[in-house]
Image (cartoon, rainbow, N blue to C red):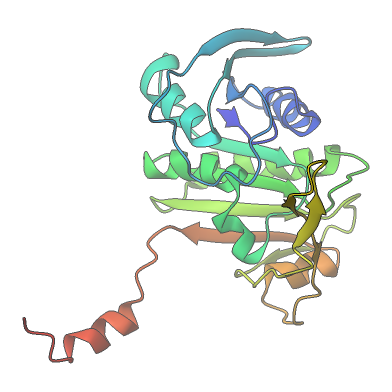
Length: 249
């Protein structure tokens, strides 16, 4: 099953669907009806969700366009729309990287995580450029990884977060850990016609520290970055420390 956060007609999703359709016995697509980038794990609680059947020319798949978030799409698909449980959930191909702490905000990663939460192996795939020249290299990487995951499996609850450099052809692959992605001038202040200020989220990625083990460094050096993510955010060292405190009430 494929989802994304760039919307069901995004070129990255179409490239991924074509690549996966060549290796899958069945393919389902359930994605937002419009772009839902940086919406993280948000769910629609106070409004109805609408799922419209759609079709992709040249791709044999059962597909739905959903009036919700990426997490909505995967949950709705797994619990209501799909006739059977998929072997793997893929999300992407995102336009632009999902590196370091950006995975917290990413709708692409959140869609894959919903699959992992349901006990299904999951992969999130992104390009290393916000203006990719071609989604096909990332699609090839995704298909190769999907085949490996289908054969070998993943530990329950794990998402593979994959970032592919634009125009990737070096063959270099790095298994990485999350870096820290920071931005410069993240808010642009503007004034509306009535003289009232407002703020537009923007900014450019800062150059991260160089470290061979980080996902940000792998992309910088032209390698595919594969980071296994688990969403248990418990800091066990701090938990052990807190047990030693006198916090009796």
